[in-house]
Amino acid sequence: MKNVSSINSLEKNVPRLRFPGFEGEWNECQFINLFSTLPNNTLSRAELSEKGEIKNIHYGDVLIKFGDTLDIKNDTIPYVKNEKTIQKNKVYLTDGDIIVADTAEDETVGKATELFNVQGIKVVAGLHTIPCRPQKPFASKYLGYYMNSLHYHKQLVTLMQGIKVLSISKSNIANTIIRYPSINEQAKISSFISLLDKRISKQRELVESLKSYKRGVLAAIFDTKIRFLNKDGNSFPRWEKCTIGTIFSERLERATGDEDLLAVTINSGIIKRDEIELKNNSSDDKSNYKCVHINDIAYNTMRMWQGASGVSVYDGIVSPAYTVIYAKDLNNTDIRFWGYYFKAYKLICEFQRYSQGLTSDTWNLKYPQLADIEIFIPCVQEQKKIADFLDNLQRTILEYEKCLDELSLQRSELLRLLFI
Image 1 (cartoon, rainbow, N blue to C red):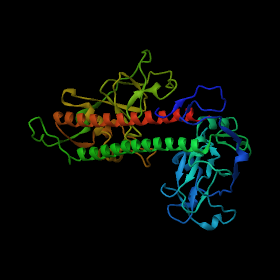
Image 2 (spheres, rainbow, N blue to C red):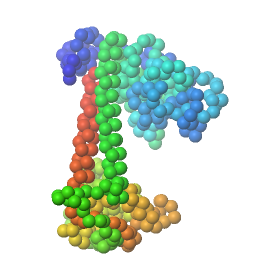
Image 3 (cartoon, one colour):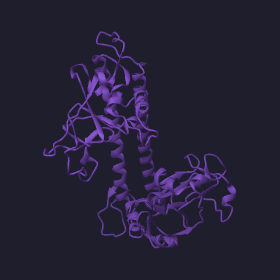
Image 4 (cartoon, helix red, strand yellow):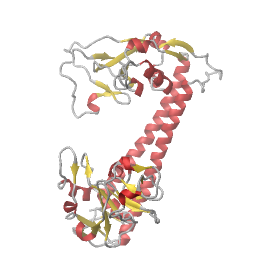
């Protein structure tokens, strides 16, 4: 990493990586001697609004929505609906204040965010938060990054209390240790991580823009607002009307229970079950499981209208709760096209309309209903053109997502190495 050097020293309180020009051990101080705690309110989500005069930081947003630092002026923060509900013990927060979420369903409890760019905006700390203010100067954003680092958070793990819901108290957090270098080194670390965060944010925006573009293209293609040309530059024939049942039949083949077959499931597409589970939790008795073959389409009968379908690249078995269909004539069907078509908004609406049940929890799209749905389809040559285009677009999205994952991993590793 440019401008960062490894530390080969017998000093105890120094990080593994350090910017050149900085020496000496880091300081350390107990939380209770470094921070003063501030009052918070107990407003629920129902008591917040999208508009108002006073912004309110809710613990759920700290855990999920907000990052290590929070731009009060520019980030989206809910407002207090009725200001009279927080008149007592009201303290407005300012730059450098830290908000700690003291409750969570898992070990994310203790997640913190540091406020900056307050610019006189009225902002208060809400339900299940521990707002605190440093009693000595720190470089902007340093504490936000440090208090979310693995080095600090592991101190909190042993202090968490509860079973279904975990929490951490002010008295427990008071004894944790905050480590920090000189304010100039703090600023250097914060500036570097902030730049990396901006790079990650831009990459995330690119990924979301590509996904949004894909959704728009899918809608336009299957509304026939976008047409592809053949190799001679001419338009393909008009899409023909038919039913899904003229293209697909239901696969009724079942496992006998004696075979050693691969268990697969649906998760954005068809994947091996053990790819999303630490172990195969499918039933030991697989005699009623449905067989699925390469190029079959399997779908969740209760979630088809949410896009829960996929083209199989495996020979295996799926839960009896799924329906498996296969193309009657693979020579005149590009199965990749159908994988995309079944997730297009226009067809999703039809799946929803043909599902049976009074509420969305009881909707169920069995094959007989699926087979009756009327659609328009292009010739197989245009199906291939569409599938090739969407495959290329999906590969681009996956490449950008891979880059985003790598940047996020790099960030986690740097926080491990730059802090102690």
